Length: 332
Figure 1 (cartoon, rainbow, N blue to C red):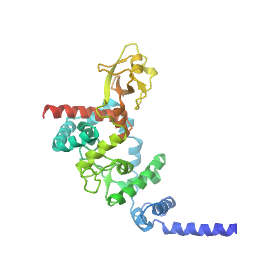
Figure 2 (cartoon, one colour):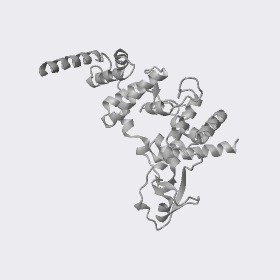
Figure 3 (cartoon, one colour):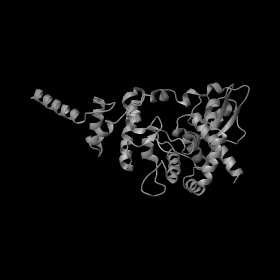
Figure 4 (cartoon, rainbow, N blue to C red):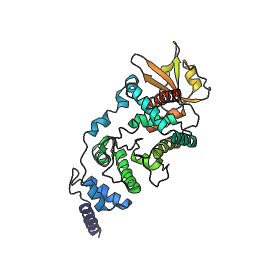
C-alpha cells in the first residue's frame, strides 16, 4: 500500500510539472520556475496559463548583477556621493517642482506632518522629479534576480510575488512596467512590497498611480514616512564638532538613535544647537576627503534611512531638502 501511494504522488507531481512547464524564453524548462508558477497559481487568482505566458517571454537581465554588487552607497565616500545629488540643477528643479505643486504639497504636509521639502527631495534624489524612472523591465528583472542571484534570492522572490499581486490589483500589464535595476517603480521608486503596503490613492480616482499621479506620489512618500515613525515638527540631523581630546572611537556610528545626547557629549562632541540630554540620537559619521565629520541623527533621520538603508542617502535627502527650501523661500 505504501509503495502504491508513492507512485500515485509521483504521477501527480509529474503531471503538475508538465502543466506548468515553461515552453519558451530564457527560463524554458526550469523546474524551480515551474514550481513557482504552480504555487502562485494556487495562492492567487492567476491561472497557470497566464503565468506560463508571462514567464515564456522573460529575457534574463544578467547586466543587473554587477549593479547590485556595487551600489553607490557602498562604494563611495560622502564627499563623492554628495556631488551626485547636491547640484544646482537638482535644487533649481526641486524649487520648480514645489512651485508647480504648491497647494498639493501643502495639503499633504498638513495632513501627514512630513515637510514639503522632504517629499520634494525624495523625488529629486530618486528620479530627478520624474525624469529618470528607470528603463529596465520590472518583471524580467525580478525573475532574473529571484532565480539567478543567490545572494538575495529570497528577497527578490518575495518582491516577484508582490509585483504579480500588485499588477493584478492595479490593473497593470506586468510586461509593460519599467523601473530600476532592482525593480523599483514610479517617480518615488517604490519596490513592489512598498507599493502594496504604503502607496495611497491620494487623488481618490480608484487607482494608486505612482507613475503619473503627483497627488498619489506625494501622498505615498509622506505616508511611507508616517508609517515608519516620522515625527511631526521633529528634527532630522544636526552637525557636531569634536574636542581635541575625545573618545569618539569608543562609540559605534549607525542609523538608529540608540544613544542619548549626554553619551555623545561625554565622548567629546558638541553642538551649537540645543539638544536635551536625554534626546535619543544616532552618531552619524561621514567621510570627507581628508577628515571625518560627525552628525547627530534623530528619529526622522532614521526614518529616511527606511527608504534606503544608508546614512549617505539620508544625508543627501536632508541636505537637498534644506537647499531647496532655502531657495524656495528666497524666491517666493
